[in-house]
Amino acid sequence: MVDIRQTLSYAKYLRSLGWVVERTGEISYFIKKFPLLGSLLKIQRPDEIRMDTISKLCRKHGVFQIIIEPKNDLDAKYLISSGFKLAKDTYLPSKTLLIDLTESKEDILKKFKKDARQAIRKGSGLNIKEYSTPDEIRIFREGWKKSVKLNRFVPSTEQLIKLKKSFPQSYSLFLASHNIVGRIIGGVIFTTSSHERSNYITYYWQAFTNNEGRTTLSQYSLLWQGILWAKKNGYKIFDFEGIYDPRFPNRSWKGFTHFKHSFGGNEVEYPGCYTKLRLPR
View 1 (tube, rainbow, N blue to C red):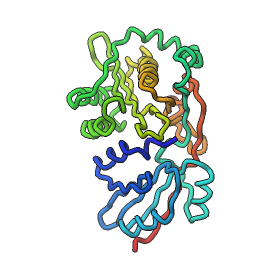
View 2: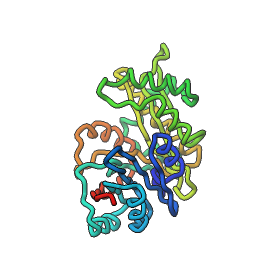
View 3: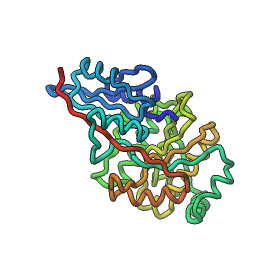
View 4: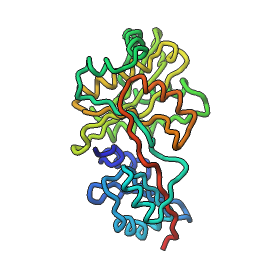
């Protein structure tokens, strides 16, 4: 499976945010330049780790730190042998849940916990709307901002519009649920690895709810609609994009991990994040 971070759509998105993207042999290398310091090189879930290419890019861009998040333990061992160290935190979720979308809708639903199935039935009358144009995404973002605490990060409208442009049409989906007066009470973004080698993965990218949304359990219905949308569009795997991992503990992840586990799925672990400092030449 090709991770979404190694697709052309994601490379386009990172470029729109100011990253330099070098793509060699269908592997994306992301470079962020910092005044005076040099550059940071980030490689996320590549199919292959190519040290010769990494060395060339380090010299070309004056890299002072390399960050690699490998796909498997074999690549992690290779990084350790090459002088990399395991970081305490990760940039990408180190553990996730996957649902097989090739099964029938009935079989997928059958594997959900009873509470999740009940929540989906309870929320069947919610008004759920798709947001796709720049003006609609601006409204979506305003609803997001009003739904969460002030200290929670919310992407800017510009970032969200760029995300939609990078994953156009059926490669992303912005959904929001509303109360009876039309106010947004919850929202979710799904993205897909649109690359032909990706096995067609849909990702549960970002989500939010306010107090009313949590009371009405709107996120269950939103997620279920995303699963149905992914299945309808021919995607074969649904990735929940992160659950709590005791190897890299973040207590704030425990709540939504319980929520995600109610949808079943198979757990998948990744090795973590490996870093190496170097003196630019």
